[in-house]
Amino acid sequence: MPNDPTIVCLSSHNADVMADQFQRYAHEYDVRVCTTAAEAKSVTRRVLDDGRVVALLVVEDQLSDAPCFEAIHAMRTVSANTRRAIVVPWDRFLAVAPTLRAVVAKGKADAYLLLPRGPRDEEFHSAIGELLNDWASTRQSLVESISIVTPTRDPLTRKLGDFLLRAGTPYGVHPPDSEVGRRALATRPDLDGQWPLIVSTEGEVAACTSVRQVAEKLYGRPDDIDVDKVVDVVIVGGGPAGLAAAVYASSEGLSTVVLEAEVIGGQAGSSSMIRNYLGFPRGISGMRLTQRARSQAIRFGTRFFTGWPVTRITLGMGLDQPHRVHTDGGGVRARAVVLATGVTYRRLGVPALDDLVGHGVHQGSAMTVAAELEDQDVVVVGGGNSAGQAAIHLARFARSVTVLVRRPDLTATMSRYLIDELTWNPRVTVRGNTRVVGATTDAEGMLAGVIAHHDDNGEDELFPARALCLLIGADPRTDWLPDEVCVDERGYVQTGAEVPADRWPDDVPPAALATCVPGVFCAGDVRAGSMKRVASATGEGAAVVALVHQYLADLTT
Image 1: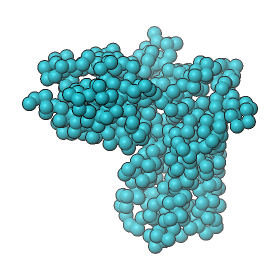
Image 2: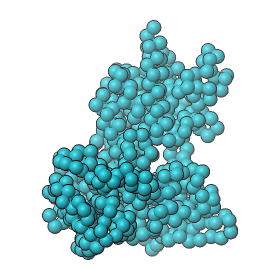
Image 3: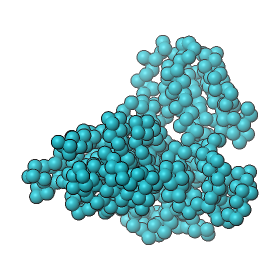
Image 4: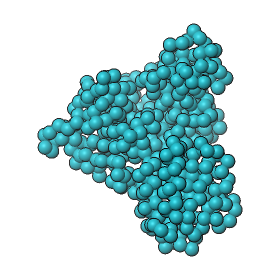
C-alpha cells in the first residue's frame, strides 16, 4: 500500500535472503530491499519527501559502498524515530559481536541479529516484531478502544492520553470536524462544546471531566466487591512491587485485590525503554512490562481497580476483624495489606513553572506529547534513570533535548548504559551544575523557554523549550497512613530493623518487609531503605507474599 509505513532492508550480499524473510511483512508495510547504501539513502529520501515514515531499517554488517554504521547514522539523522537493526551472517557473528555489543550499548542501533539461514526463524522475527511494536507505540493507533474528540489538546486531554497509553489501551484524538467527531456529535448533539468527549468501542459518547471517569468505565469501582466478602490480601499500588505481589499471591491461591491511585505501572510504566531488566536483552518499555504483569495477575484471579487512591485504613484486630482499606469509590476488607504505593515526582517549587503544569510543563516523561514535539526544543530536569530514558525517547522527535542537573555530571545517579546513549546522541546535551529558576511563555500562555542558573559561573541562561519534563526525585505517598504504621522523617514506611525498637511487637523486630502493625506489609520504593530500582521492587513484591502466607496461617492456628 502506498501510504503504509516503510521497512528498508539494506544488504549487499544477502539481499535475496532479506527479501524472502521480510515478505511476511509486505501486507502491512512497504518493504524496500536495497543493495547499496546510496540506494537506501535515495529510497529513504523519497519516502520522507512523500510525507510517509520509515518504521524500521535493517542493515547487513558489511556493505559494498559504505560502512554499515554510516548507513545507520544517516537514517538517525533524517528519521530519528526509525528503529535500527544490524544483521550478521553466522560465519561472521563471533568476530563482530564485541563491536556490535558496544554499538547497541551506546544506542547507535537498537539490536543486532543473526541473519536467518532458513524459513520460520521465529527468534529473528520475534525481535523484528518487538522493534516494530516499539515503533508503533509512538504512533496513533489505527484500532482504537477509546476515541477522544476535542478541538484542542488541553491539560485534561493530555492526562487522558497519558492514562490510556500507560494502561495499554489503544486510543486516538480527533477534532470535532473529523469523521469520528462528526459521528460523535450526531449521536449526542447536546454535548457540542463540552470537550473533551469520550467515545467507547460500542459507540457510547460522553463528556469527560476527569481521568477517574474513564478509569471507572474501564475497570469499575472498588465497591463492586461484595461488601460482606473478605479477601486475603489488598495491595495498595500497582507499580512493579504491587504487580509482583499480585502475581505471586494470586498464583498461590490467595484472593487478591489491587487498588491503584492513577494507572497500573506507576512511574515504571512511564519509562519509554528499560534496557537493564533481566530477561529482555533488547529492552522493554515500562508500559509493556507492567501491562504484561497485570495480564499475568488477572490470569491468576487478581482484581484491579484503577484511579482510586486509598484515603485511609481502618486497622483490624485479627481473623474476625479484618483490615478495611477505604477509597472514595468504596472500601475493601482484607486479612492482610501490602503497601506498594511507590513515590511521586516532586515539583520544582518555582511558581512560574508550577503554574504551567499542563501547559508545556510535565511531571514525568511526557510520552504522550513526544510526537507533538517534532522539530521543537525540550528541556529535561533530572539526573536519574527515568530522566535519561525520557531524554532518549524525546530525542526521537524533538530537535534538541537539554538535560539539566544540579550535580556536575550524571555519573553518580544514572546507569552507565544510559549515560553512553545520551553522550552519543547528537540531539542531547547535558548541562551540569545547573538549576531551573524561571520560565517564559508565548502569547497563548504556553511554555516558550526555561531560565536556568549556572552555579559554577553565577549566570542565568534562557533555553528555548516547548516542553519541560520534571524528573527530579520523588516523595513517598504515605500521608494517609494511620499513626500506628511507622514512617521515617521523609515519610518512607519503616519495616524490619528500620522500625524503632519501642514499636517492635513482643520486643522482636518485624520481618524484613513487615511493618510494626500485624498484617500490614510493605514493598518497593515506598519502603525505607529500598533500592529504588524496578528489579528490586519486583523482588520485594514477590518476597512479601511469603510473609503474607505465614501471617494468614498464623491467624487460623
